Length: 146
Image (cartoon, rainbow, N blue to C red; front, side, top):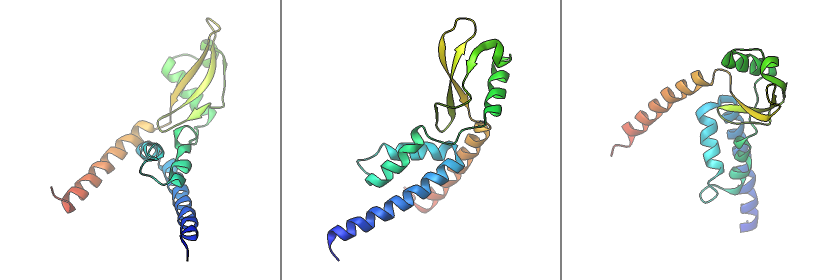
């Protein structure tokens, strides 16, 4: 077997596992998306296939439903959307680890704005992620004393 074939095989393996990690991170959300985002910026230490696949975590994560977004904005701002915005796009411009963003136009001034809306239950997810991370760190510290 020559080096070129090995490279191709390694590339296929890296892409397969990177896609799997991408899907898991998107499913788990929160901290795990942050880790994937970080990995996608580390082309100096990560294989190119990983960087390419995980780059989707920068702004292409699953979005919350338009109904959930509208409820969150109305609750946060204390008024119906129609009173605050003359238009509010139900389609997210981008979605990342903690929030997604939507285009809107202010009813009062006509100014076009971008509204950042935290994902539904992200606070609870991040708190649980911190509990899990603490357990992982303690476990690693136990087996890898300084």
